[in-house]
Length: 159
Image 1 (cartoon, rainbow, N blue to C red):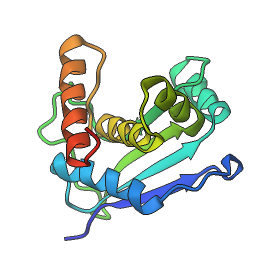
Image 2 (cartoon, one colour):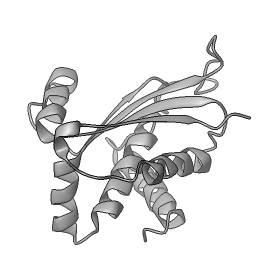
Image 3 (cartoon, rainbow, N blue to C red):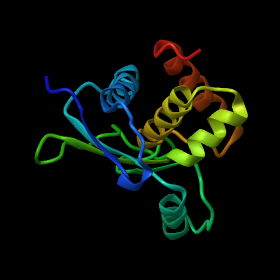
């Protein structure tokens, strides 16, 4: 069985040093806990506020910076489907892409009294859950998603 492939891209002008193996492990553990252990692929982009604001404006109509965006390629949990995955011709399930604003993550970590590692982990987990069809628009969805985030962060030892 092939493990999921995670393509990580860090915007060069950020001048930060991130442990890409650690970022990949966060994604892989989240997918594993959610039962995704087959051939899958997704992207993780760490960028700046300007880039994420442009994406937010273009794709969500919201002209402001945000912490994380997820561009999923599987149906939402709200949609009626037999299986969240359709077997693609290449056998690899293309989940989508998670985009995180590093400066926003730093700001939120400081506001919450968290380490940047914990904040990035939370944003990665949150984004991956979105890729898998989870949402938090309605109160019960928010409660379910927060519970999943907390469970995964606990497994990752970020309690």
